[in-house]
Image (cartoon, rainbow, N blue to C red; front, top):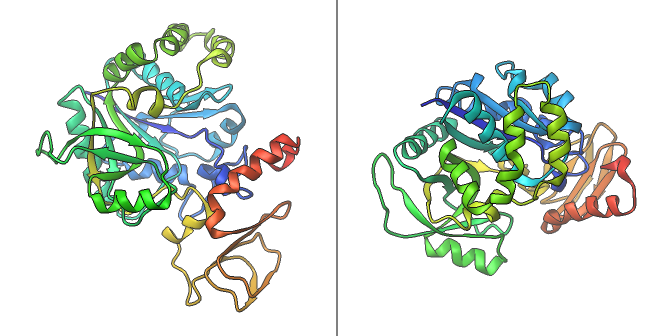
Length: 359
């Protein structure tokens, strides 16, 4: 069975504003110092999935830049462009229909484009095991991450304590998907031992996920059939532009994963972090002796436990403790680290005020 990677690369990375913008979002930035996050993602599954079998779903505003800087192995015909954002369910169905039409029933690995992983060898081993489980069953397979601290920034997966299979790896039925909890609930999840972080990595046969769309999101499925019919023809772009704005906007989690009784999870431990907000930069860069992560031209006095990012302009600080300071020349963010998840609210406020040149 052919294996394909589907990378969701249309997000705006709003919690990483002002560095991440609508046209140059987080996944197209080199945050780690290695390569842009999208290319890191493609390189990571080398040896498990042929890199030329990479399908990227993105949006119109990012497509030109993405094509110019993405990994050389990606075929231009495998870039699926959404004219408007309609959440992850539509993106995934778009990719599944495209893969199945061109290659028949195939194994489909869905990956976010903007995660950071430190142990790539272990990641590849876990992904290979998950692919085996998906190929040998008609299950929706997800990889959960064993929590290392009571995170309030991640969703969680509750799983049954007794595995339904132990070979090639322990596999568990999913009991429920849980949204980002408060701190007390996160502590309870951590101590219970049967909750994992939701990595957003999913593995399934295209036939399996399409059947689940027919069952749980039939309106979205039927709406997208005309797109499938014209893929690869001269009518493709016109049809997509007509249909996409009318599609139901819903996440794959709400639309299918939380409803299906065929979802299983296996646990991964490979130094995963979604680098979803400024306070998560510690997963990439170790703090200095004062607890600071500084990527800026900075001079400070009595500055501790802070994240300071700049684009060359001198940043100075006095008596700052536990803050994020991010300067990109045209915008400056200052906020406590414990408010990092609220940065997206600033982006929403900028939209509300019509200040779109900053987003």
